[in-house]
Image (cartoon, rainbow, N blue to C red; front, side, top):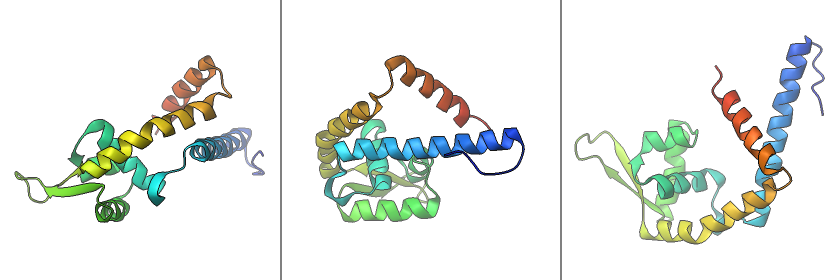
Length: 149
């Protein structure tokens, strides 16, 4: 559905692009998660934090927040809930006690090792509507758009 804004052609095109990207992203995510529902009642934000730690290792909480596009306040709540579920632990940086390092617990590592292949497969299946070349083009364009501003 295109934008109904009555501004310039450039504005209408940009708003239509925004709508198309948002709807396709939401739909792509839903299709993938329908194929591989998040385990144990995890939220997508919680999963994103676990995924970052699983693939990149222990990190400062502020670094994780940047990587998963969350605010300081939101990441604190997400981390608190993951810590309560015993999927990660916080520890103070021994050199700078103001900084918090996040790391997966054995339970968090096991959860991700068991689940991540399923979600990866779910996203691959959901993306299969596009050819490999179309997927590569979309990746390139999305990255270009993401670097603007």
